[in-house]
Length: 130
Image 1: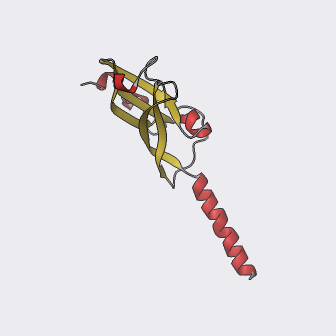
Image 2: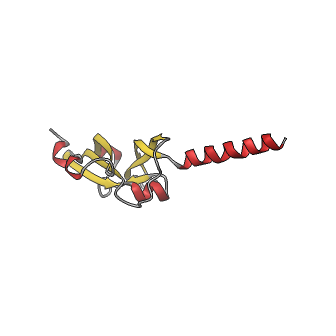
Image 3: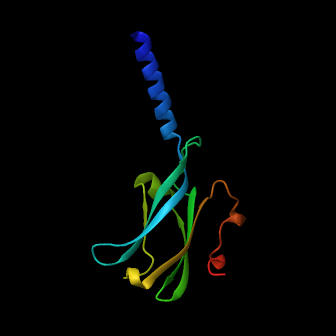
């Protein structure tokens, strides 16, 4: 019985270690309207690399480039998601002041790891609408 308890404890520690060793590899986005009718883009982690170490930094790890149109005007937005993912588990973006869902059309959304890509290879806002 002692061996079963030890085996259970060891496996529990191993599983807990692997759960804490996650790194986000992809995100999902959802354009919603809040209770006041304003459009927001909600970004949440979608998939994880179970073998990667959990980032300890609070900024500069997870980057996002959003290409969208607001009232017919092309716009692009770079965002660091690291702090919000670590503290809240999601990021809420405001794409335009008092924007409605009908005024916003989201095109490309590019998620990238800033810690794995050199700065000169980050997606550029100028590449959004080519």
